[in-house]
Image (cartoon, rainbow, N blue to C red; front, side):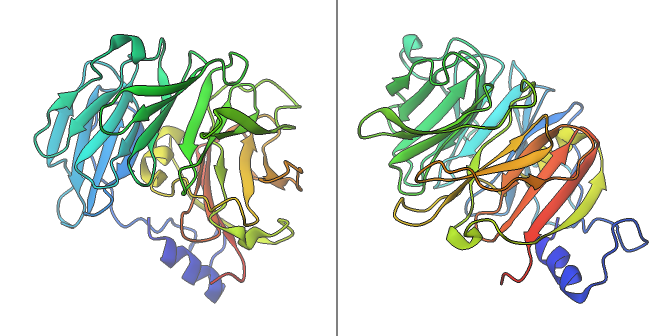
Length: 330
């Protein structure tokens, strides 16, 4: 999907949600899986897209070649894929599956590595895994309720936040850009900020989930910088396409987690599954801000924020994906 094309059309004012011009700006469609695509990641340096699926395979696509729609390489797994994260250097791919043991793949040779100490691993499915920006650490969150921090070189677990969300399954876990904090979300609809130097929860962002129990894992994230202010802004949204929601995740996971240092004004964002609204808090003091209605007619299952601009994408069980963009931003 070409985000710049969407924004340019909005600026010209030639988009109507249900009119003849409402077709999605797809650059290319890639094929090769035989079951749902559950995760994707973009290579940090090359024009390579990697996708993981319930068909127990990981596919690598070279999207620099416009005529190629099939994968250039396939990694066979024995369990369905849940989450993936590229090493910032691009040489390795961290993978979680329906098995509790994390895998580390050499992208070039397809060799698979696992930690040498089985006791380090989770006890249930790992829902999310992410490298820090400097690759010294990576973090994982599991259905077993634990958040684990791993050494990026030895692949040993160096810290475990046991029952991080009072035993609820962990939906997402990711580092801030400075690597000093971890933002997690759980099936209890609470978002927490953890400080690595003290191994404790600094702030809990509450208030989501008041209208019903969360049924599906949903990620929490920061806005790309302090430009949202108090979220007293107008958003433009564009309905992109109507497809099975799992493929929304496949095309837009590139708009991934970002953050700034804790000295600037940062917003924490988390979609409330039952109310259909986007919750937001001041990251420093957990003050809850105004809700943003996401406009879906079913649960919002996918939420990803751009790392470079005030824009995000939502995907829902109503088979629609919506692109949201702050009007007036550059």
